[in-house]
Length: 279
Image (cartoon, rainbow, N blue to C red; front, side):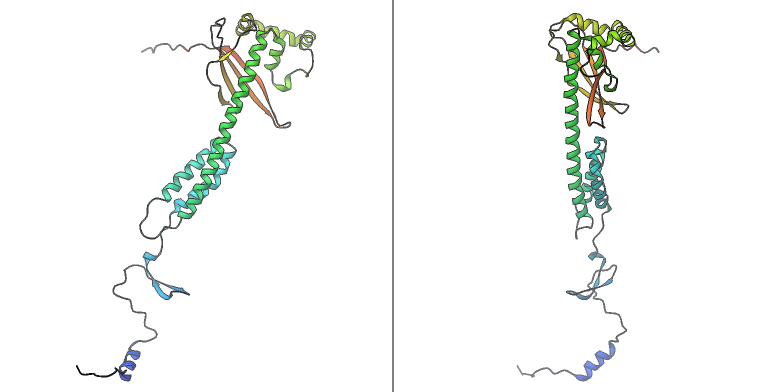
């Protein structure tokens, strides 16, 4: 094979090439490049090159919604009704983190942050709500039992005081029997209530030695914005055949930062009988 020697640059060919490439001409696109939106990008590492639409990650707005709802989920620590916010935040976050193809979509990072916030605030709000329900139920059960025992012992004056709100009760340490004897209005009111209360008479006649048992767990509920605890009691000795319902009402005293209980109602439970429909 004949050695032709080193290849030398042809000045005429180089000059013709430079002449054909004008500075005002746009850069030539490689035929193998993908079709779509082209936009210039300048960077210290990549220099000057063309960006296609495949390089721009998609944006998921559900991730941003998840973050906003996650921040608002802090209200669930105050009111259990606001637990709907962390639930909604988790739903949007799961939707934002659905499977993707290609580059990671924008909005998934904030979705993760929103999920963490919603989970923490939601768990805290639920725990506080359950703790409050348990505390109110236990306190309502305790005071309802005390009320039934007072009636069984014949201490009707003190039982009548437990049926009043804290602001309407007699002064602490006062002899209630003497106070009711001196106050004709209070005396007549108590006598009228005793005459109308068949449940109170039945419990008093049953005696003081009744070991009351709960028929079911206390029911904690709100009625017109006021907290109530409904307790149901059974007499295991059989002296009282009916189930006794004692409804306790809890009224917080924000000035002294305490909660006051009083008996809202005491009655026998009766099954509701529905008449057949008349066609």
